[in-house]
Length: 222
Image (tube, rainbow, N blue to C red; front, side, top):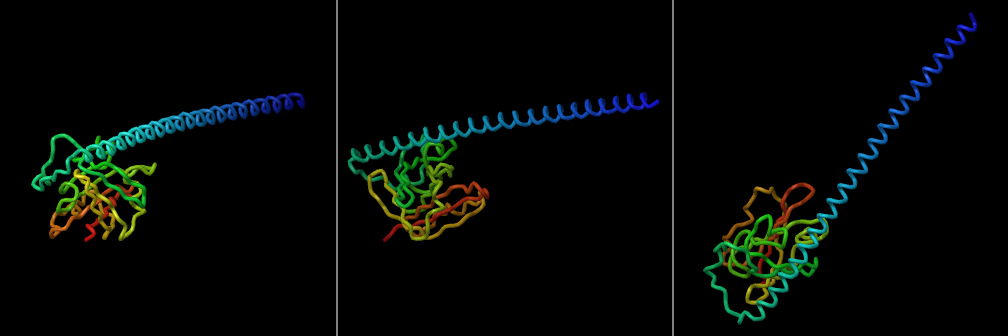
């Protein structure tokens, strides 16, 4: 009888150990699956991040070449005046209409004449208002990238900081910031054109954290 009981207990122990080993094997398999899945996802994320950085750097180089082209073109422009009647005329194809320069945040980019998703990947763009340094409210949009390109450092600006706008004639007008605020993406009140004869520049970019738009208004220094 004792031998029989002993054999039963032994068999139970073996079954328990086998069950435990099987559970451990399943757990290990699950851990392996989770681990390798995490590694694959991390690798994909790194690849996408590197690709995005590559695209941003490529667009940055294009933007620098555009700015260089602007400098050369103004040198040989003959200083001919831009007709103010063209201030609100949209062109069918994009072209450089000036340069924006903000020394405080080391910003220096060509301003493209029209705005769309492809052009915003290349440089900052005019999306409303007149040509640079004309009467009215020139509204300029730019992406907010994580690598400090385009308008990503606008949040560092403060009231009374200065913005330089160069037009196609090579003239530089200095604008001083008088208002900064965030608003909803659908709010386009910042594009107002009733400026009482003043020259105003409005800069707009997105806030990647809360999804709102950062708006900066600056007016010409008398």
